[in-house]
Length: 77
Image (cartoon, rainbow, N blue to C red; front, side, top):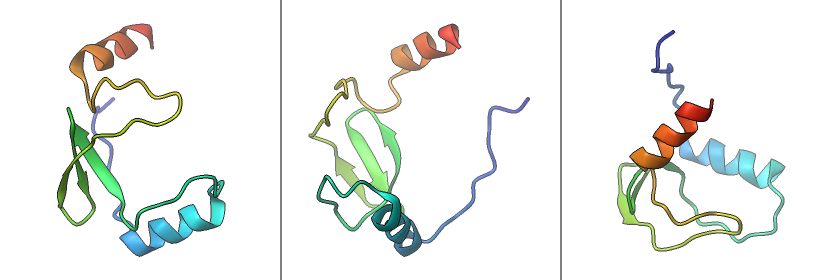
């Protein structure tokens, strides 16, 4: 089985509309869609890069795509 999935491109506005419709509404949102992360850096659907300086409830601050965490998850799967 291939490790790469076929990606479906959904416009940012459509993703935001889906989240507005089906989300809990408990958190304030920014008008962007994050599509990738590596370490402390994240990128939105338009290719803009950000530094992720926040964590959320029940989220460990280990960075995005941490190879140590990914390997531990893969071993347990």
